[in-house]
Image 1: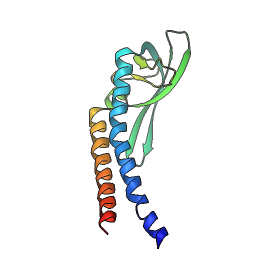
Image 2 (image 1 turned 90 degrees about the vertical axis):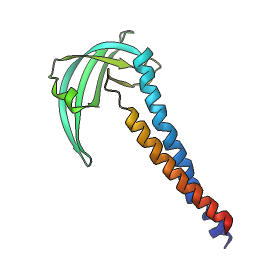
Image 3 (image 1 turned 90 degrees about the horizontal axis):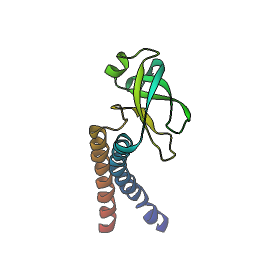
Image 4 (image 1 turned 135 degrees about the vertical axis):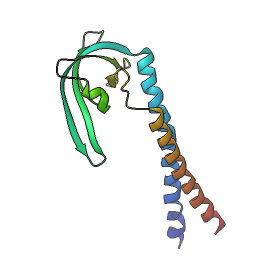
Amino acid sequence: MAIRRVTSWVVPALMLLFGVGGAISGWGALQRDREIERSGGRATAVVTSRTTVETSEGTDFVISYRFKTTGGEDRVERTVVSKGFWQGLDSGSRIEVAYATNGTRRTFPVGQGATSIGLALFASVMGTAVAAMGLLGLSSINRS
């Protein structure tokens, strides 16, 4: 009986924890990409390939590119971009990329950051909903 009472709060507590984390992380990712665009490094990259990848959600439009940082480091990266951006590129195309200068490997073509306001808002709404369900679950335990 005591074990059941202790474990009955674990799932709602985890829902609350992960919900709050999801709500916050969407906005954090958006801020990270905006900071990279605002004050990160910039370079001209050369597209080395463009491919599509079929996923359960549809088609991802992927480009690979290489560039040299202002510090002289050669980088080869691969990222998902919008269909319209992808269609305008060929191997050998030159694009402007933004990259993190804080030691992380985060890089993306300018204007193609992975996080949009819509995605951050979606993560925030879903995280809040999960957190609310966890909070309701915890409050129902306290009433019983």
